[in-house]
Amino acid sequence: MLTNEKRYEEYAYVLDFLPRGKSIVIKGREGPIVQAIGEERLTLLELLAVDDQDFDSGERLRIGREGRDKIVSVLGKLSYEDLTQDAKLQLPTVCETVVKNNEQRYVAYFNDLQPLTPRLHGLELIPGIGKTFMKSIVELRERQPFVSFDDIQTKVGLREPAKLVAKRITEEISGDSRINIFVKK
Image 1 (tube, rainbow, N blue to C red):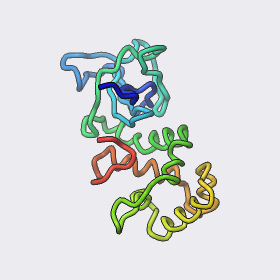
Image 2: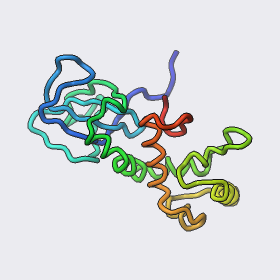
Image 3: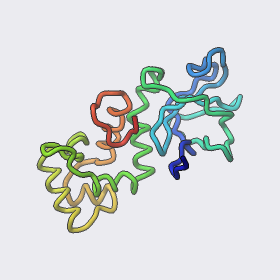
């Protein structure tokens, strides 16, 4: 069965760097290990880095099959529990960077999310959005779709929508949510 959906991440953002780490994914594998989050599918990943490289938290890395410069290979997927304490602490900030760098994709959620049940709208799963904000978002997007986070903030009065979306993504990744809207299980 062929699908057009890509199964691999092209880019990832650094959560933590362990210059002399031990792989969680591949037993006995040691070396410079990077814990990261994929840009497209928001997958937690373990990467093997090129020796003598340095990494900053939130740095965007090319990890696709072509054109890697600082990464040797993608070792595999991690669960939230596998992350180092530093990676867990960096996750909300790095998620916000991912959201801001992919603004159009996340603004589209404000334009597209629908009711999940008769009593719960998908928008209400984003922290800070209750019935009142949800109703005004739905009303305003019917007149004209939102084009940016600033547009949402200005028209709706919802403060820092990128930060709220990042907070929701962090909840979904850490397993603190029953329903996921951003992260595929």
